[in-house]
Amino acid sequence: MKPFAESSEQNKEPILSILMTELAHCARVLEVGSGTGQHAVFFAEKMPHLRWICSDLSENHAGIQMWLDEANRQNIEGPLLLDAREEWPALQVDAVYSANAIHIMSWEAVQRLIENVGRTLGSGGKLCLYGPFMYDGQHTAESNARFDAWLKERDPVSGVRDVMQLTELLSLQEMELINDYEMPVNNRILIWQKV
Ligand SMILES: C[S@@+](CC[C@H](N)C(=O)[O-])C[C@H]1O[C@@H](n2cnc3c(N)ncnc32)[C@H](O)[C@@H]1O
Image 1 (cartoon, rainbow, N blue to C red):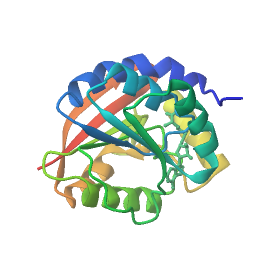
Image 2: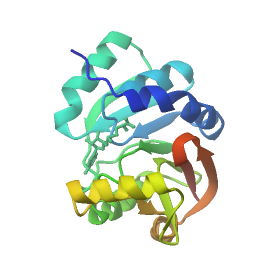
Image 3: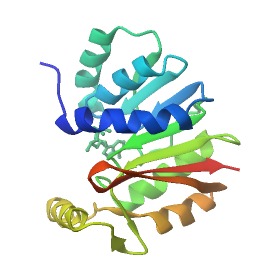
């Protein structure tokens, strides 16, 4: 049976409303940590001008493939085997998108991910991250603080990430924060662009 994430179903429309604008001038988008593949199928259908390249660790590939097989869309590629911790092969993309993945990873993995993003994107390329974030070490909501504690109990190296720390790391890749959107249930979409 196809895997199903209720959260992806709930957040896909609000995320789409932002991506429609942010990815309007992109041709190829790499998704990191595609999970079930629900976002890939939905966004590829709603943004037919894009070629959507999904990726994840190998354990999720069979599930993603089921969604792709059923959707049978020409503008989706993958799933590629991309691990944030490893160096990625050369990829031609205009944007990298990832939802609810960087708080699952260790900070070291997030650092490697950002280096990979910096190597992958050319001038004008965008990084779009969706999820809960902290600002200057502060949670934006009590529910995010509880989620962070739950994540750390499960895996002490995971946790909600700080926008300032991410922006500092991304500046080393010549990327700057250009947009920060408030999303439902205390999530955000952050957009960094390579100068
Ligand atoms: C909470 S799920 C989110 C899935 C999907 N993006 C969504 O929004 O429903 C986190 C995803 O990150 C992926 N992930 C975790 N560690 C990773 C790594 N080191 N490299 C690439 N993906 C990773 C997981 O396999 C999983 O698919």
